[in-house]
Length: 127
Image 1: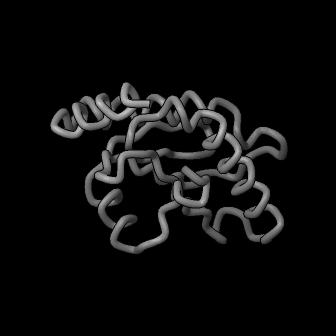
Image 2: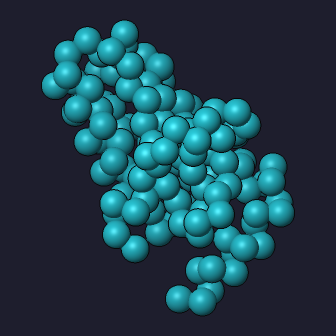
């Protein structure tokens, strides 16, 4: 799987996660997760101008979130993850505890929707 395939791009995908999700958060971000049917984790981000006015700051946060997601991609369940910035982070502290937060949100989502869990559990054993 290419990392490009692990992105949420359609509005319908975002709306599905926003409508019903499981959340986990750090001081700066909230991670929402919902199981998907594609068989691998995907990432979407909501980084508001209201929280970070400068584009360079928003882009830095996005890079940090994407890198944290990429590092734990193999350990995550087949869920759609949406990361929402909820507070202005201290520069250099954007991704603190983010890997653990992705795992926690994914585990909560799989526990809430157990019908999606067998399909996700069977997929890694086939590799």
